[in-house]
Length: 116
Image (tube, rainbow, N blue to C red):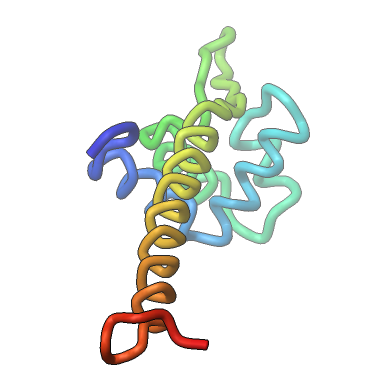
């Protein structure tokens, strides 16, 4: 497989599959460097739950963390989303080609000539 490897894809899809993680990621993107405590103030889950979600997002490469004094601040890392989008485009093109070939095959008459 070229581009994104299977393990990388699984990590990204797993991280993005959870709706709470998608909300957390959106908030990190919109609010800039933010702590788990700051995120938890605006969500109906505990700071510990937010921290676990951030760990999954960080392990997938979707957010980055930096220790600043006593705080750990998280920022969005958009490159994995670009990789995922490029993979989706590649797969879409493959399916388009397959469907086009199937369509052309279906258009052939039984004796091998093109139909009307």
